[in-house]
Image 1 (cartoon, one colour):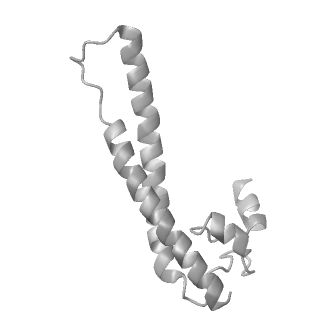
Image 2 (tube, one colour):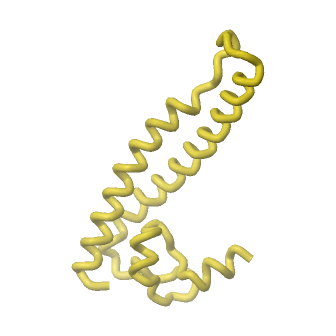
Image 3 (cartoon, helix red, strand yellow):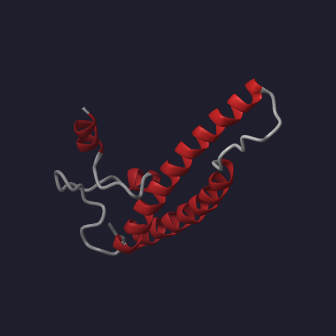
Length: 114
């Protein structure tokens, strides 16, 4: 990967980190427990608890992705960055732009999912 692509990727990772930090803050508010003394109807309360559960899952996923991106950012300039950890082949740049935290090429990722 050339220096220009590395710089483009670094900027994309930094932007994703910024966006995810904002998402985490929003999900933290939405994932707060539903107060039992909240005077809402039974069905509405169940919906609120369900929404809180969905937001908690989204918060967990956002935190996980954020942690992986923060680990990937300092590695961008490392010579092995962008190489698949399984087969050693170069991960396509387009895949890295979409999933910069990935360390598997498409073929190896599909094999791991099976």
